[in-house]
Length: 200
Image 1: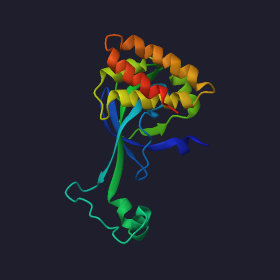
Image 2 (image 1 turned 30 degrees about the horizontal axis):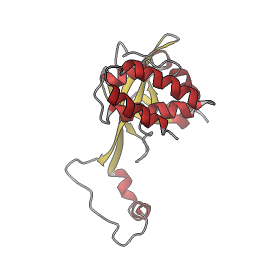
Image 3 (image 1 turned 45 degrees about the vertical axis):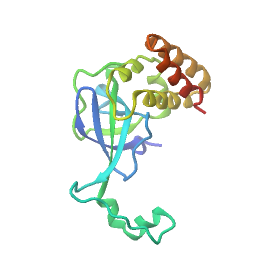
Image 4 (image 1 turned 90 degrees about the horizontal axis):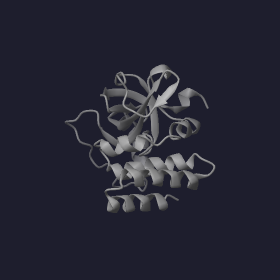
């Protein structure tokens, strides 16, 4: 697969701690917790997909039901191909790291991504390299997100574990880091660890 195969959209809104991407394909956003990157390699910014929305291009016009006689929702789009041009899918990503020369730092970047920078779903090997360190977990816990932070962390950790030959080892390591970060909130920690335990 080429780099183009992993491109999912472009940045349309940006700030120091998060960015919003418009997907090229309707309903084409990466899954919750997916690691994405944007920007040139020497200034790449990494984010976790924290919320996805599909809305009308024209905010004043709401969709109307069209499938009363259909048995499959896909048929609605087949019979009304113009619908794909009337809606857009966007996702918000919480920034969890950036490239500094040849080093990946799990910290907020000195400058935010740029509008119209391409956004890529990180390849499995990129996701494994990024998640070798777990400092990004603290960033997620500290930032408000469209989805509950614990759900986002559980999704991100499950995905990172799934890219590894020994996923259980990674889940244990992530669990230990979360235990350190949430030592003063044992109830929250237990609930989060339970989500990780049932990752499969």
